[in-house]
Amino acid sequence: MNLETRAKLTGLYYQHTARDWKLFFISNPPVIILFNYLAFGKGYFLSLPAFVLTTLTALLLGLAIHFALMHVCFFWRRQFPAIEQSAKRYSFSIVSYIIISAGFTGVYVWIFNHYNIFGFRFTLNFFYAIMIITLVINVLIGSIYEFFYSMQKWKESIEEKERFQKLQLQQELNMLKSQVNPHFLFNSLNTLASLISEDQEQAEDFVQQMSRVYRYLLHNNEAELTNLEAEIKFIRAYFHLLQTRYGRGISLHIEIANEWNDWLLPPLTLQLLVENAVKHNAHSKQEPLEIFITAGDNRLVVRNNLQRKNIVVDSGKVGLKNISNKYKVLKQPDIIITQSADHFTVCIPLIVPELKAATV
Image (cartoon, rainbow, N blue to C red):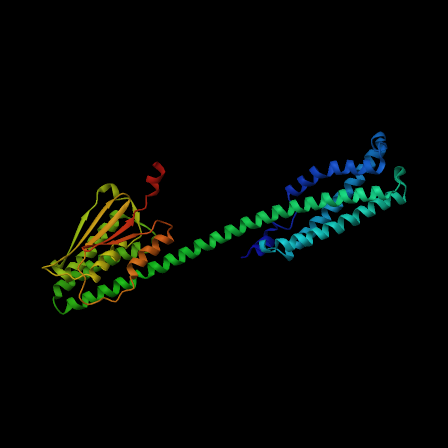
């Protein structure tokens, strides 16, 4: 629902508010007194009947102008509701205010002069003075209305943009998470297919381990974050599947103190990093691929020895991009990737849990 439709349904922009009445009763009394003093001179204050009658008449005139201006204001808001149309809306409104103010004031002066009310005598100086005062006051009040309206529309425009950005970010996050399921399942099934022909008992064990891993994936892939303790348990089970296929060609070393257990990170981050290391590095019993996972300084560090395969592996670095994009969507610091002659290292920011953040 756009802003104009919502405004029409709620009546937010097209009805008098307490602020409108407050502005009217603050601005009109001094104008009425000045108006009548210019019309009747000192006699305005010397005759009680004249004071009461002319004050009430001027008040009624002010109310009439007020209602006319507000309806014109609402009309132009309906015609040009957007914040981008402010200049056009304001221009048309000001022209309308001038015409209405001049018309009502002219009628008021004509009535007092025609019926010679309380000895009123028309002069051009009075007419010019009262017209200028009326126009200035009403244009000023109209400008105040336009200012409040524009500020409200600007605020709502920002809120709507923020809601849209959050929705867009959530959709992006969902897309990133959906990329993991097929990728993981495809690799697991390939591994299982190779085991069936080699060792059926080992294949059965692999299926059981795979079911445990995939259960975690289904439970946590829908979440934006998981705690490090759960992620470590998952990566141990996942690594068991890898060792079923590669044996002593790969090894995993995890050294993480318990103090980091509750810290958060996107689910399956470690799975993508471990899989990335296995995919791009040679590994054998004689020269095993060693993967180290440590934590410190609010970061999780995943490092592996670098021993590139002789055959170039076609890769768009999807795994690393996936992790990096997740952190961007979550508005967290980006991952840090470093490479030396012997090691490849990825530093993953750990997100402080809310309970810990509240006590800092």
